Image 1 (cartoon, rainbow, N blue to C red):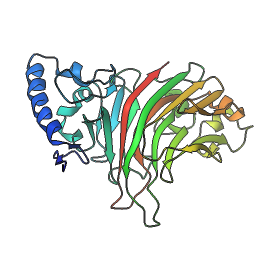
Image 2 (tube, rainbow, N blue to C red):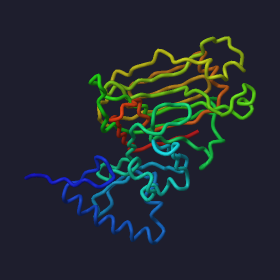
Image 3 (tube, helix red, strand yellow):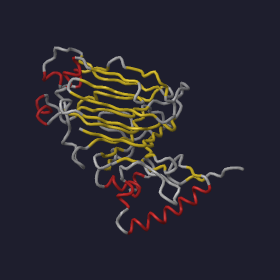
Image 4 (tube, helix red, strand yellow):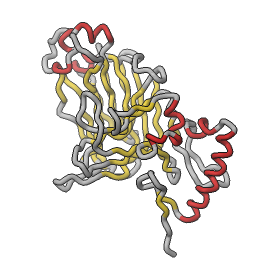
Length: 310
């Protein structure tokens, strides 16, 4: 028997079987009815495990967005932060870039070349941690520690002119200058380098890049400058995840950084560079940071769960 497919407008790649489609219509009516009672936000942003709702054939992602804002590849670029992000299915500007796929309980991040942030030429649909919802001012140090864990999949991605899949950054730890550090080195913003970038590359290889000092004897004032740091040679995990679901865990502690793939493979950075990095504040990032500027490039990253702790 042929399985008929229906595509929901404004949701790239969001497909249902016929029976699921009718169930979705029923679920929509139920959801609207619940929303009128003031409970729609708790349903959408619930961090509880995604599971079938009795009598309704759909799933919800288990991601709590209270401590995240999202940057989009449109505007200057556009940002949506708490509390507005908690109602993301009803935020018009998000509907093409951040939406539920209720067939598998994922939160989809879709992006293409467009607007970029001040210190980048690439576009993103990416979450930025906010320890205080709605504010970038409160962040954490390696001495305080931080842990991020997510289950995700790169569901679809464009092919570059060289025939290889486009590259995507799926997780980061980004540095940030305090106001005092910013003023000390004469900068006009609080930007510091990202100490960690995790790439989905070459069709499914997970690649980790960290920062190293060009001169380990640099003064504390000098190491605050972006120009004092360079990329390390990188680490490639053995497992090729392809477009299948996988789990990543990032653990930062004083003088140490660890990345774990599928609770099986691990790489640890506990060198002089991580010790020196302790001078910076940091924040986590997760989502879809497309590393291509080709006009027809795109990527779709699905997150099934995402948690942070300090």
